[in-house]
Amino acid sequence: MTTSDFSTTIIVNNSAEETFKAICEVSGWWQGEIKGETLQLNDEFDYRMKGHHYSRQKVVELIPNVKIIWEVIDSELNGFKNPSEWTGTKIIFEISSKNGQTVVHFTHLGLTNQFECYGGCSWAWGELIQESLLSYIRTGKGTKVFG
Image 1 (cartoon, rainbow, N blue to C red):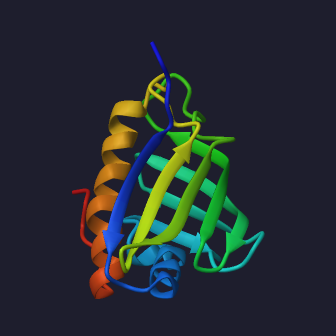
Image 2 (cartoon, rainbow, N blue to C red):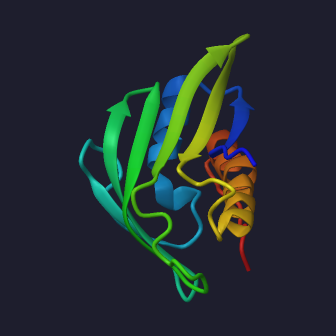
């Protein structure tokens, strides 16, 4: 069985600058509680969906309008044998242009089908990126994905 990291892509008519800014405004599109900073290199922020998920991300790469990488430095996913599966993984946003549009390629590096949470986590990321982030970039308002 081959393993591959979860990834998905969205395409928007917004500029790379607008897209980059929207991704960095995590609380606008990632449903749940966000505490901490997300806009500068080495910033750290906590994400919490009470009763389900906690993770702490550190901004480890930030190239304006091109790339964002968060390293998951702590995690607790409730209901799994290894609740810290995400710890040590990286969440990557790569921004490029194609045919006058802005392309966002999202990868959760390390989130593979070998993870117990892969089914639920990949579904959640798909919804968050394809629905909420896409909406947030286009309209300034994310969508409710969970609950």
